[in-house]
View (cartoon, helix red, strand yellow):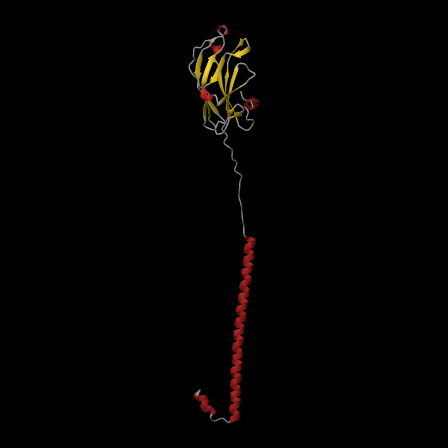
Length: 234
């Protein structure tokens, strides 16, 4: 700057003015050039940013298009565990019986399955000709505490004594899974001696059967037993 100052001291006014104009023009031109460079850099940055946005958008679209899914599956069958089974116990050693003799008898029915059921206990025995017609050679009377739990069901078979496990005379009672019920009572030989003389020991034996059916139908003892027979019950 000192050299410039010393130099200008030897110039006249017009020459100095011209030099100043040239200097200012130089500064303005340089400033324009610098501004142009800055604008160019800004433009380039915007182009780069725009290109980045465009590429990002394209990548997003490509990702959405090329995204893959899969859903393997199968149907698993299941079988309901339906165990409908029962057991009957209570057999005793053969008693000696004559006309009018009585024994205590206590068959026990158990629901050994996992399904609720209705139950009957049935005696099948020989018959004899009485004054009132053909009758079973035995009678069975439930004991006092059993009488409200068991109802005798009338049967067309004279040699059959059928007892239903009931809430009342007109309604069966459900035997739940693993439940045990007993028919405690008195078994009496009612055939007279004259009739018994015609039988062998084998003839006066009797069969006890536990009869069970599901609880989907009737609730009345007669109707339930008819459904049991109709469904193939023995």
